[in-house]
Length: 144
Image (cartoon, rainbow, N blue to C red; front, side, top):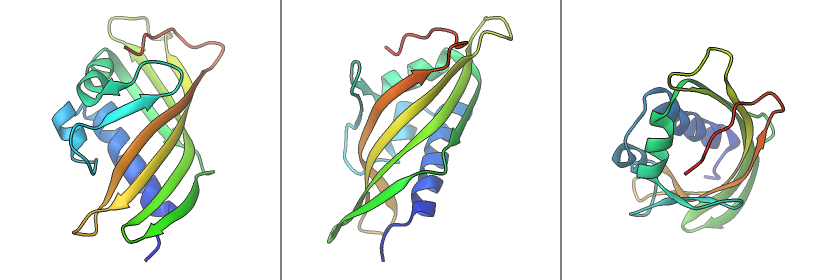
């Protein structure tokens, strides 16, 4: 069965809900990944571990994420069942102890390779942030 756009968007939402809303630990985030010791590859910056991703999101409150409708899914392999998923997520949050109007606002490029594990669950095999386009009125953030 081919990996569908809806399956990918559901995975994107579950991962970002854990990361941004529930503030899941690096260990909890790792359950979404196929391979041990995953990283998020940031093409325009430093690659980060899931622990570093956790630490970034601990510095933020009032986070939101909204995936775009324009995700493109390209089937890569039938065995293992693998696809490339390219899309974007609107991301918003506020640094802890900042003013209500000091929001970080960005469109984040997502370029993932997803794969079904032996049990049939969809997992992230490779996670690349291809860009962070900060809106003109965005508060600054250090992504390290």
